[in-house]
Every structure is written in C-alpha cells, then in structure tokens.
Length: 167
View 1 (tube, rainbow, N blue to C red):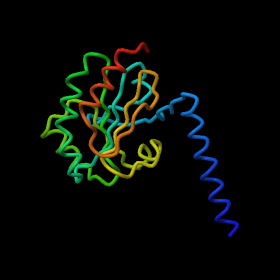
View 2: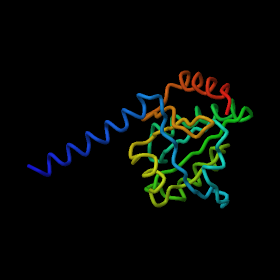
View 3: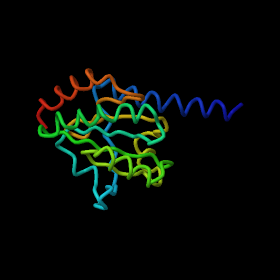
View 4: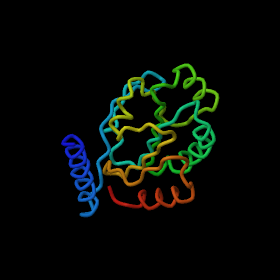
C-alpha cells in the first residue's frame, strides 16, 4: 500500500511541476541531441537554435509516417528559405538499410538521422508512437507536439507565426 501512495505522490508532484511550468507561460526547452546524418556528418541540435525546427520521429514500417512524408517534404520546401529546418529521426527499431532506401528513393530534402540507441526518443519524452512531431521556436522551446499526422493547415499557420517572431 505504501508503494502505491509513493508512486501516486511522485506522479502528482511531476504533474504539478509540468502544470506550473506552463501556467506561468514557460515552455519546455527541447533537449540537446547529437546525431549522425545519413551522409555521415555529425551534428548537434544546438546548431539549429535561431531557426524554427520541426523534429519528426518516424519509421518506415509506420503507414501514417509514410503517408505524411510528402506533406513534410512540401512543408520543408515551403519554409526552408525562411529560417526553417526539418530533422527527421528514424526510430531505433527501424532497419538502417530501410531508412537509407526510403530517404534515397523519396529524395528527402531535409536532415535524416537514425536513433540507433533510442536515446533521442528518450530525451524527447519517451517517444514510442510514430509519427510524433515536435515544433520548436527559434529559442529552442517546444511549442507544439503532435502524435499522429498533424493537421498541415494548422501546422503551416503555426510555422508562419513562429517564423515571424524575433529570435
């Protein structure tokens, strides 16, 4: 019985902390992640500060992910010249050869990496469902999280707003 009370108290305290953060207008900072792109170059998410960033967790086995990919390409192409970046992160269980083939055959125009260890999904709040997409403002704060395919009209309106803000 005591363990249940401790677990409940822990969850309650964590929920209050999150609620308090958002109640005072604070936004959660996106975690810093190191990654290797499909071309072999090593990168850090810190290099994306000052840009509006869409971080998309996906898998080649996810039908919704495959369905939304042309919309992500279109979104990237529409905003890339205005200070927008897309970071596409394949889940740890996705075979690297499948990810590489998918990226090459569909000519993905944005940054693609593989979360081989699951560390990036963990840092972004235990991402398990795909697609899961985060939108970050120029300060690196998470302003929106989508689980499932986003409403792209709503997403574009949000991106317009964020791109218009000062860094």
